[in-house]
Amino acid sequence: MLFNSFSFLFFYLPVVLSGYFLLGRLGRPLLPATWLAAASLFFYGYWDARYLPLLLASITVNYLGGRLIGACSGQARKRALVAALAANLCLLAYYKYANFFVDSVNMLAAAAGAGRLQPLDIILPIGISFFTFTQIAFLVDCYRGEVREYRFIHYVLFVSYFPHLIAGPVLHHREMMPQFADAANTRPHAGNFAIGLSIFVVGLAKKVLIADNLSPLAIPVFAAGAEPTLIEAWIGVLAYTFQLYFDFSGYSDMAIGLSRLFGVKLPLNFNSPYKAVNIAEFWRRWHMTLSRFLRDYLYIALGGSRRGQALRYRNLMLTMLLGGLWHGAGWTFVIWGGLHGVYLVVQQAWRRRFGPASSRWWPPLLTFFAVLLAWIFFRAPDVHTAWDITGALFGANGVSLPRGLETVAAPLAQWGWQPAFDGIRWIELAGPGLPVLLLAMLLVFKAPNTQEIFLHYEPCIEQIFHDGKGSRWAWHWRPTRRWSLGFAALFVACIFGMNRVTEFLYFQF
Figure 1 (cartoon, rainbow, N blue to C red):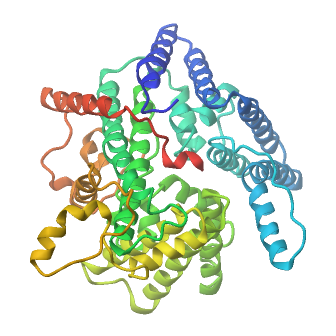
Figure 2: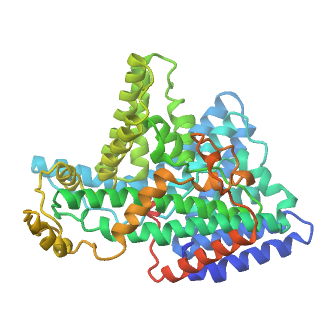
Figure 3: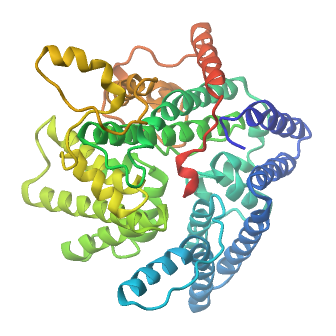
């Protein structure tokens, strides 16, 4: 069941909301929390009921592990933490990385002429990375003595909460547990409905009207063996760069909007990352809760910047390499994480040597170009295809035009230009793709983001940060008739665009 599906919008969500607030009228806060937890587990089981017992077992074991860690002291406390962390990492390693290990061994075996291992018959449980990382953070905070809420039903809801379960954000118990226990959230509030539905519609429009229309431009370029030429490569890479942006930003908005319907605020997870002026700021704006997790529970645990520059650079590289592996079990993801590690090291070294860049235009442009190059490895099916597309951006595969542009041959001939139209013949240039790509670029770099539009109504847990331009926009969201009609029209446009339901790109992680 997808957020952008009719079954979710017109059956699941109304039923869950109705049951939640009807139970809230009984004055017993645990009843609506139990209902919401059960509905979240149903949401997960709807994808594949075979892995619902796995999720429940993970929740139960980690809850008991957290209680045990909290009850122990000294070395026993540390041993309990290590055992609980090992159980989570082994689970993640088996389901997500076992076949990657087998494939890597087979690659080395083929080079040495040795025998091959048989791949394991494993289907990756959806959302396993998110609910595992959420619980790892819980266990570490139990060890640090920072956990105060131990109600089992609230813990089940904390882990399985359906707005975040499949693709984030990575939640923190300290932020969520008090909200689940707040009886005021079990009563319907017109303001929460107005804000939540409006933010949800913005996210739905990003997904249905923008991201899904960019997909046909990217798919053929990233196909194995496609060998795109220069213009095709740029079209495909830019299309994917903005498809991923609006796909993930759209999901994040929908998650925030859905949660607000229940009176619960989620942490901000996306804040105009392509406006970043350096790569460190990019990671403070892109998948913000994952960046927070990697910083607090990996980078700082490795020593952070406390032991000199050399170890700081090592810690940055290790953090980003592991962050790359978190996104996917493949060498393309390792390279993607490694590239961002190199970017961070170079940026820190530059800043240490020359100070912050003073120019106003080239740092964000250079940052965007570096991110764009790294996305090629993130999206490509294998390393060879990624290198081929990277070379194509610089003309390595020639500069012929896609066949979809043959209609401009005559005007070009009048100017004495006669380029070859022998590029990827199935690239979708006749549809809405190119106009949507131009619109996407305009929105990303010139328009306010969702949090800036809803700034006066605190859509998320934390105070947002922006470049100071958000307050200059005269049109902030207000609960007025004009805004209501505008969002109603946008929702209708989304409904008509939902004839081809597609999964969110981050579901595979």
